[in-house]
Length: 448
Image 1 (cartoon, one colour):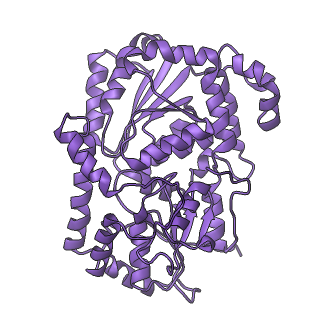
Image 2 (cartoon, rainbow, N blue to C red):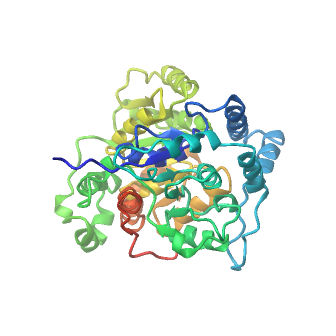
């Protein structure tokens, strides 16, 4: 008889992409499906409205951040609410922030109570206690603990550094177990009062279909194909041949792929920075027409961004050009599936330093657009530290500087640095801990 696969409750929130993207790798381990804490079946109208109001304001402010005076001022106020204090000097940072106080008040008013009451009753056959509770946002973990969830509670951290709100209100006595993407996040949570024994450094949960199991068969094959396009003159491969051979394959095995250089430009969940995609169309127009470059414009689940990109394709007479593809899906899990598939044939990922920062672990160099908010600025610093990401220069001249970077082998080096130093086995490590009670952490953990 085949042993039944172990399951857990996977709880995310439908805000932006980050928290659901972190939940996606656990679809096959989720009991029934991923639960969204802000619109699950049975949620009260008042509770849903509370969540929805916050989400809408965040998207509006993020989208119009670039507007002079009003947009910048509104974003500065919101950003201050989720401020991340300097790490040094190391000190006690356990005092609750205003953001945390707000959520604590909402929880005391009943946020999440109905969901936890339901999950406490939903004990599958053969289990004596409720399934493990895995949250990819801190609030569901907090209301699970507050309302006495009877199973173990875990929280996946989705950024390279986090604000005080990511640690519980009573951080020193909380039993929530944290699954951190890097060592810095663990150290930060400890400053917030979380016990070291309640934090495991696992890495961010990257999609399993882009890794290929313990052998990492898929990610290695994809990087091997990618290195030629990122180093067309062989500068990096010649200088670091031994390095490549030690960690990937002999350089003679790196062949020119059948596809041209492929760039994927990803817009965030709020639809911010969509204009940058049009700049890429305009400046790379000639190369796209000749099929020297391919461009994926990622609209995600935003129909307005999809239509915006489609209109631009017609304006530049690229709508029938096979070199440009607009990526869109009606729901987020379908979008993540398509996105992960195109990443396998992507050479450069161009995006703001969101949770996609951790996708550098797939051996994809990241060109960063302007970060939005404290957490993205810290993500940017982490990418710089491991050498896997670079800031975009002026996009109006991308048709000049991008090719200089390629000829120098610089982006090939960034791809290898991400492959070597950014953790990618997070999904497997987390499942080992949550489902099998087997401590599975990154062994060669560095400061960052």
